[in-house]
Length: 428
Image 1 (cartoon, helix red, strand yellow):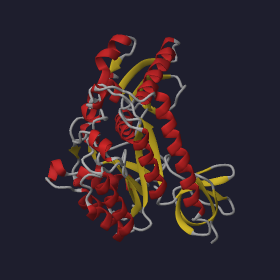
Image 2 (tube, one colour):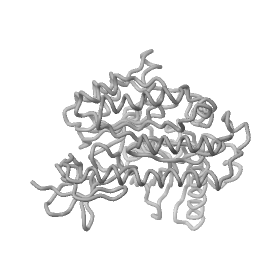
Image 3 (cartoon, rainbow, N blue to C red):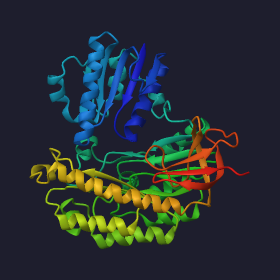
């Protein structure tokens, strides 16, 4: 059979898709990923159900493939992932032409639903869909936090950490297939290991991963501020393989809203943590995510957040307008901020961040950085520094004065900059 998996949402979903693709390949099927218009026997939609926009994208995608099924271009449409886990009963009633709805944990059932065998010995083996020189390493599932706006614990359940041994084994497998950059992902990196080892285990995991010879960069995504283990930053300062980069969503800075969101810390504690990062690793790139338009957010509280962003100058930043989600504490109240105002607040901060990013990028002109080449285009090679994660952060556009190889590292001198791009050349 020809089986096409379409992945929507986050990199954690992508890893799930890669595990399934490998199972289908082991069954002898022709497998495809994110091939949107090809004729196939089965299309599997790995959906996102986190916020309103993501849910709408998933629903639109299901309807699109049901139309392709009606036109005879695909034979079966299967839906899995977070949207299906969260709304399976409703979706089954509303979309009877879907050939099966499955949750986030139903990999075995999905494989069996298309008439294939699930190979348990391949449970930790994946078919990588990213460029071969980097891969995501999902170190845990679920989340034990209780943020008032977040539906993830209700979808993915409580935290389930994978053992250090299993993760090292998978990382060695991935590096043996060419992955030189390992991107650690989880809903909450900060709490990794507390369920398995009764203590925070992120530092111990990093100490094991840096011993893998063929891995050059280890990057961390989605750390929670409350209880962040400072030894991880100290380890970052010592270990050259650990990128001076941390994705740590803060959501807001106002004390009242932090309390309403049930974030577990005050503004002062958050500021102390962020400034300690820069003290211990002066050139660390901090990426964060903000939430604007939370119920009851006043103009003054938004301005407090805006002023903090203006003065702290995060290296990378994203903003989401609040999405009113059922089965969350915040969802039980009133969504009293108009959508237009949420959008306006989001755009104001992103315009500010654009100015900050340009300022920070201009300061890099004339400096030399170690850059990995991700791809080649007509006019440039596209690369990244250790301060940039693929697809979400800045890129380095390298002139084609020399022949470079994808997946290799080069010393690049920065010659110019834009808001979210650097330009450079390899001089030797």
